[in-house]
Length: 148
Image (tube, rainbow, N blue to C red):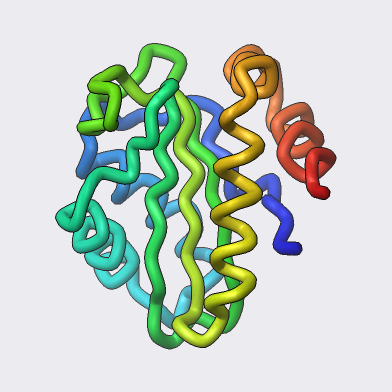
């Protein structure tokens, strides 16, 4: 199962709007896939959002998409303690964003990762721990230590 890496964590997002958050997430993982430009990553995310918001409720969004030319599945976690309007299904601000980018040929691992992230962030206690985490190391332990 794919692990979240420290350099792909944004402890406090600078963005205040939906499109800006998607760009900030894309920029953060770009160093892991330098052969694919930031605009392509951003376009994949915005096109997916046009199909329906990935704001799943309870202060969580899981922007995701498949990226041609990507060699492996990538994760990025961003946190906003103040919350960001993201057209979530419950119309509440989003505080935790977990972006999943996948090569087109990795459907099984992509779906397993999406399910794992969804299950992890459904837990009120774990969500609160993510919001209260003081540093990147704590976020890494919460995310990677919770793998089945």
